[in-house]
Image (cartoon, rainbow, N blue to C red; front, side):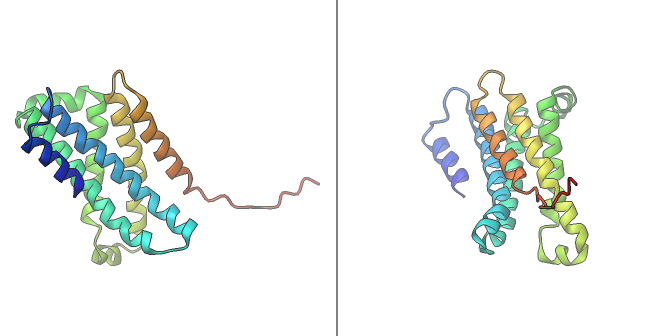
Length: 181
């Protein structure tokens, strides 16, 4: 809960700077990406360490992704636009970074709804297929950040590289003997 505590302290001590709404939105957007990276790192950590504790943390981290993405979206809708739906709809339809960010949030909804043990049992093999949406969400989140950043690309590119590496670690290369004879 550190991200929520940190921004609360900034609000309390009036340390949000000249653009407080932007700082709040960026804070929660960045923490969403951090939790996406943490969530994606659990399977490789399990493979490298042979410890299953990482998989037990994955669900909680995934729910934090949805939590912070929702606060990020709520800050945009409530603080930036004060729930004025027409300009929000215009932004979603006209600005590609908002469209892709909103799409990522929409894709998070079924993952959060089906994150319980009960839903795993109900969905069986379809649960694993559904939860692979996190890969698409990670790419969308990365694109959202890159397209949002008009001048400073360093941080968005770092997150993109981390996400690409974490996705690449999932590729299983099968070692086959090739007969060239």
